[in-house]
Length: 188
Image (cartoon, rainbow, N blue to C red; front, side, top):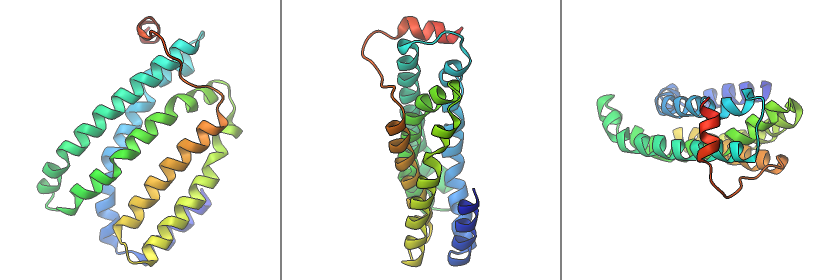
């Protein structure tokens, strides 16, 4: 948390204030999508008394489909939104950040499993590495003059690293098979 705050202050000294404003507009959609993905099936995985592999796979599939739909809408409306706020570069930023939504969908169920098992240390272990490496990428890109793209690279790098590190620490993997009965259970 301290590292992230320090890097944000450093980036604020390197980049123009407008960069952060445009990025905030683009991240509004990404943050909303991430919030939606943590609700529903993932929350059911944490709260449900009895959870099996079918439930976990069902939640995983639903999250991936939901993320793909949200990312598609995000990509489709980005030009309209950019025109509405009179920031044409916002379209490209939104398109570049759309994969963050899909990457986040990959970690929601393994995250929920670790939360359910109260393995907070394992859950939080990925954050320092992902933060340090994505921060280094962002600072390097900012110093290279990439402007707002430094922040985009930071978010993309953090999302990729977070997904890789969380999957590396989670023994669970989705299984093939019918998920419809498990979806009915999760809805309850």
